[in-house]
Length: 252
Image (tube, rainbow, N blue to C red; front, side, top):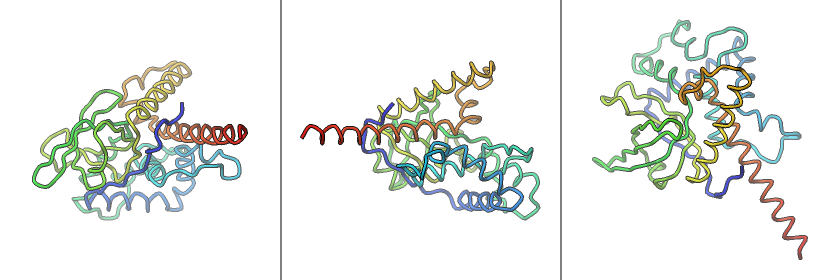
């Protein structure tokens, strides 16, 4: 699989101040000496294809890929030494005071997962942009408040990101984007999704368990595979581009 579009790019998106503060608190906790070793394990898992490149390799992860890996570490990764996940540690163990505004985000973050989301609709209301997103995996629809960066993304594009349910919203479908995303064309997004499905089926056959059969269960437990698939697509596209240049040069 190769990315067909050269418009693949990272996107930054604003977060509510209380969620941004919680994200910084989780990162700080991950850097504590008692967790530092597991932090390396978790990030290495999420960014495996880049870590395995000899001599640094031809590609570095996009800053947004690194940020999504940090979210995976904080919300999805269960340490190999039996510790609780970071968000569970912050909720149940850490004794420092956490304000109510931050604390309301803890359970939504704990239940969040990465996803591939198609932008299906934009609506401007009261000088704000409400964006409707549809999961390629299970068709579930979400509504987010878009900022100026998201305003530039055309309908039909696909975003690899993490959505977090807004605990202060009146409507259940209202979510927020976890600060960043990777933008793909419609074709590339569907190719990444199809490859992720192949990885899901391979896992099920290998383990003999179909507990991850539902898309939401799969992305919560194996959301890092979405990062793997996207990283492999970037590497394939680079190899294809370099091979094309060499082929054209040899014909001169």
